[in-house]
Image 1 (cartoon, rainbow, N blue to C red):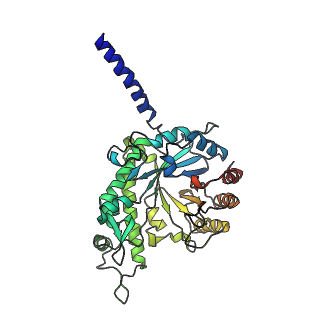
Image 2 (cartoon, rainbow, N blue to C red; image 1 turned 90 degrees about the vertical axis):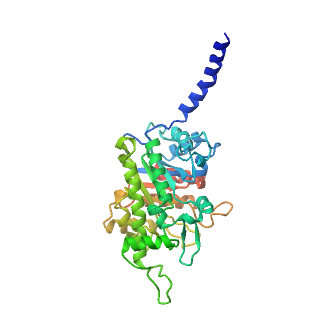
Image 3 (cartoon, helix red, strand yellow; image 1 turned 30 degrees about the vertical axis):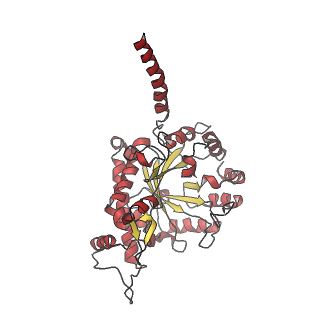
Length: 384
């Protein structure tokens, strides 16, 4: 009787644990059996994804309100993840909880029964890693260490690049999403460390950085921008290959998306200075997501017509518009303001409508946390 009692107690304890484990399993695949004709997506911030107080039924109602056919969930960084990554469990935002699975269960199907495309977003910044090991961070021309981005050599063939590839593959294997999107992946001022110079020499055949007449590095030399783009393309190519190998080869169905900045004056060129030459990147990724943000805390404000001109120019330049996503950002003015700066609801609606011109079939609105009731209403007028 004593033994039987112990067995019963163990079963009572174990069953809820098993149930919790099953409830935490992701509902794969996170993509519809048939892709929507037009992707209209909303991007959910990482802070909201990992907040245990987030009302996912409430988020689902908002997506239903605007008839969103897609949603992007920020999965975090390699140093801070939204689920228990078996290879690096120490970086989980909340051990024991798969926040991506929790969100996906609520958001993947609308009230109309239509399945949504779910994209998982990987933020390439590594500020905490750089704090603990400054050697992985990028170095400026004057020798200063960058606070957020890894060096070019690290992204190309270092431990940071390896970790990013590993993370993308882990997400593809675990969730089988519609797409994995890389954000904050760029190279600009901080690519001039000693190891970066070695890599630059190897990849270009040059003996040194381009120099000004006073001997300082000519940072705006076009060869540096092309080299930076090739460095990122190499990393993205490794990610594409890693995805192709997951889920017994079915990972090839997962799109790899790269967020890119926009040169409003010469859109088709992309932003080579940031390592984002569109032609080079499109050689390895499935799609580019353009940051067509109207508001900026540092640069000039853009108008809705600028979005129309942007996509028109890209179409005229011969780019495959089916491989472009236009991201409409709500940021405007100071991000640290109370309340934070944001586009007016009417402007958001107009921008979302303009983004679908010139054969663009995919539009994303970001971020969810800046949306108000009026913004949702304005977006519903366009999408619903």
